[in-house]
Length: 384
Image (cartoon, rainbow, N blue to C red; front, side, top):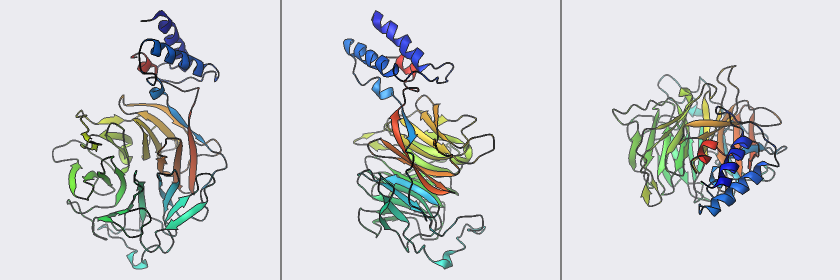
């Protein structure tokens, strides 16, 4: 190895300052220079110049003063459309509590009819002002929201036990999965579905959800092609609450009541190729993780946020490397604290992260930035 590289690598490792898996703050002025020097040395060795850049972690930093609209109900879903505008899904005057369903999982308040207010709100990313709204007289208990790369909006309703796809500008669903107000555990029904994610090839992944504790995979037309767990599989999910798809094709699940994130190979086609990672599930867990309510992916890095679990576990965000099954960073708002986070999303260009809460009912905006005090996994650098 180049002797200068032998010198720079320990310097970078020292700057990163991780001892026994812990990050230590460093001087802001020295870190970028060290990384730049390392990149130059890699170029001299003929390595790709983005090798280290791909390992630089982006940390969420709150945008002070930014807030979503007032007067909304429980903000249960958030996504970001292809133009970078955050979109939220809220319950208006409805609240889901222990009395909402009977012992047969039938919604007790169906007689009230659907929520009369608009439930899907598109916000200005600069100031949080509502730019457009729709979804009135359609939903009973909103839950999950996902906007795919083509601008299609996917929504779940736990009272209706259904999943909906809306094309851009339409208020009539193009696809409806599940049967209205009818729950079930067969291949054609859901039971309180929580979340949707879509692959680059258009496959539809549904977390089904509070009752069935399974993952369902459909082709772009809504035909079932896979489900997890299959008979005989030892994947026991307990309230799969949110989904994120990694660049490599694994589906990562916020397995809420198991207090973990588990990443599964469900055979997604990432573009024209199948996900060939046939190994066991990747599992991320540590004692302070708590109940994971939301998860989002940027490339193959995961961001997650927990919710109220116990007085000993703070409510905050986490940064994860699923491939090494490590949790190596924490984050939270600077001005206040999280109370009951429920959903999160990252903008398509990877510069913004949004978190919603259901009490108080609010939306947070974070910038994803390079934090000079917490960068680059040294174990990764040592493999370069």
